[in-house]
Length: 384
Image (cartoon, rainbow, N blue to C red; front, side, top):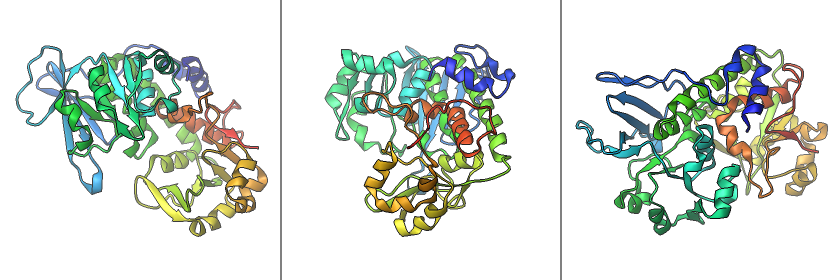
């Protein structure tokens, strides 16, 4: 997403947000003092950054099986001695000049920080939207390091990245990456997908900022996005009506829907939607049978996030019973596939992660026509 497009959206909210510039300075980064200061991580629950004199301490929490294991990392300048008092901590030399990322959100985070050019490897090139990384894949500067979910450890080690950033659950075992760790390559999990709010998910970009020495760029940009999101959320939550919504479609007989504690459920709440499963527990997905969802799907005002389909015809090809859904009959079908490139990569899963204000703006415009100034949807489109 271009900076021009971001500014255009935010101008609709308030002229005060003109400070969301493509390269503003300032922000709320907490400088190192003595003995330590906690960097401001306001929305994310899965990581913390503490600034010490001469280094940073990062802690990443695991949610595996209800546990709260924590991984600890020390971000040290090249040549700096490892400080005492951190037994078991893993060291990453900063600023990171080369990185391998295994997920689309991390590509977007790097692009947000202006360091997408430091990516030397990606998990799968098939799902990359960013033009700089795609060009790197074409020329061989960026390598694909996974095939059928298996890591090419030999290739990864030959790239000698300063860090490998993964999308795995940050459990303390890390057996999948033991070979890399033994080769002296730091592996750091980016668990943004475990967050319970869109801003918490997006705030993981601050970790990329700390790793790459771009906090002076990342932090003020994120602050502007958070302000824009909060302003939109106040509009959505105050909407006079709350249209009912259904999401996704069944996959191999199971209908996976966002649990009430998930970031997607928070999106719907902030957009002023009536979501039947908003009160359920959990931060991931609910696995439901068709019969359990159908009563709500038959009467829902809108059907969103429908999946890998691009028309009503394709929806019916999946299951002719969908024709009975109220939203299907009225045409209130909106999917997150407006920005899909010629390779089939969907930017919703990439830049949409670090631009929750644009996603929320789309949802409010869909669910509450006229509540915001009219504008073209960014990530969503209506299916015909």
